[in-house]
Image (cartoon, rainbow, N blue to C red; front, side, top):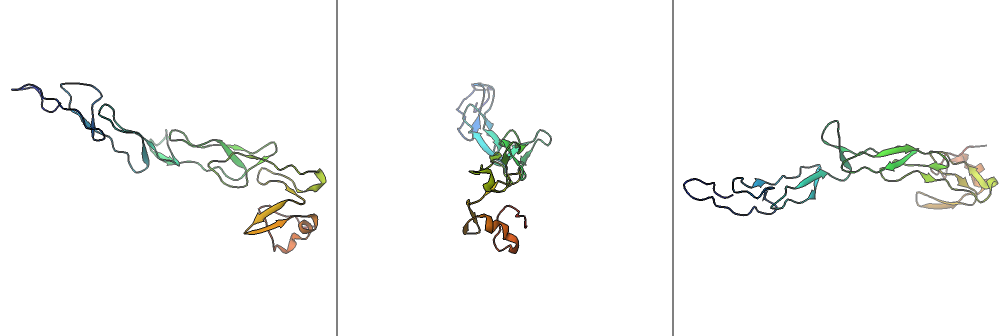
Length: 172
């Protein structure tokens, strides 16, 4: 509605896409202003002449039932993986790594990973734990732009700490 009924007839004009909307086609209601999405929100559905914009929490945030505001998604700690990723309407759900799985880094995306299985049990230099993968003799690993193949001698002489990996080596 542009001008209400009074001394003259009601004058109507359409609502403007992305500026105003009216959910009801009416000769008595004025177009309403579209809702702007705030700083921690993004537009899921745009404002049209017939519907208001739908705003949701931005990527990396979720709408908290407790605060009613967008909160940062939980990051799963080392030893836990993502069971369900964070979405605009729910926080990350983490799970403990068990049954031959591990997570050696904090993550908001990755599940627990399956442990490496050495070709032969006696080739295992370090067992898999929920915090780290197994280390196998002859396995190539990368660390700080260095590439090295681990063999039993390297593993047993690791006490000089000149080459370290994400696993803690036991000195014999």
